[in-house]
Image (cartoon, rainbow, N blue to C red):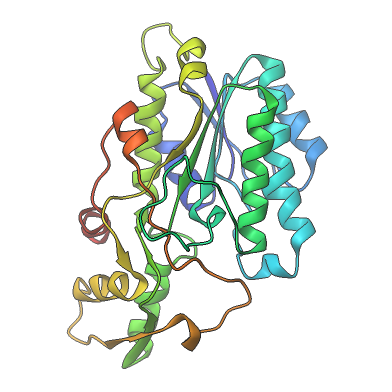
Length: 293
C-alpha cells in the first residue's frame, strides 16, 4: 500500500513519516514537492504517485497572520484538502486529515464532542472548518482528526517558545484563562498509525479495508487526555527544566495579551469516540514528560 504524507518538514508530518513505516510504502512530500497553494500541483502529484491513502497534516497554521491573509489561508486549509479528497475518491483511495479545536468558539462549559456544531471565532478556524466540509462532501472514505495545542521538539510551538524564553527572562507572563490539552505531535502520529493498522494496513499483502473505513468515516477528536491552561503547561515545562535557573511563571488573562485572532477560552475536546472505536490516548502531562525526557 502506498501512503502519501504531506508536510514532511512540519511537526506532525515529520513524526508521521516514521510512525507509518511498516504499514505501507511511505512517500513524504514537502512544500517543494507539493505546495498546497498550487491546486493543480496537488492533482498532478497525487495522480503520479497513485496512493492508496493520503495523510494530510500540512496546513496554514499562522493563526494571527490568517486574519490579514484570509484568501491564502482558505486556499491551503479549505480548498486544498477538498482537492486531495476528490483525487482520493477518483483513485479509490482514502484520506486522513487533521483539523483543530479552533473550529469551536470556546463558549461551551464542558468538553466539545463531535456532535457539537462548529462555530469558529477566527479566520484560521473558519478555513479549517471549510477543509473538513470539503472532504466530507467529496465522497471519499475519510478520517478527520481534530487536535489541539500541538507541540514537539521541532519547528515552532509553545514548548520551544517557553524553553527559549526561560533562558532569556526572569519572569514569564503566560495566559491562565484558556483551557485545553497540550498534545505531543508524536502522540498524534502514533495514534494515526494505530488507527491505520486497525483498518487493515500492514497485514500480509493487505491494504486498507475500505468497507470498514467507510463505516468509520467521519470526524474524531484526537488530543491528549486531561486539561490545563497555557500557564499550567508552561509551569510543567519549567518544572522539568534541567537547569538550576528557573524563571517565575506569572498567570495573566487573555485581555492582558491581546492578539489579532480571537482564541477560544475552552479548547477541551472529548475523545471518547476515538478511544471507543480505535485506541486509548495518554494524559497530557505523561506525554509531555516523555517528550522532555
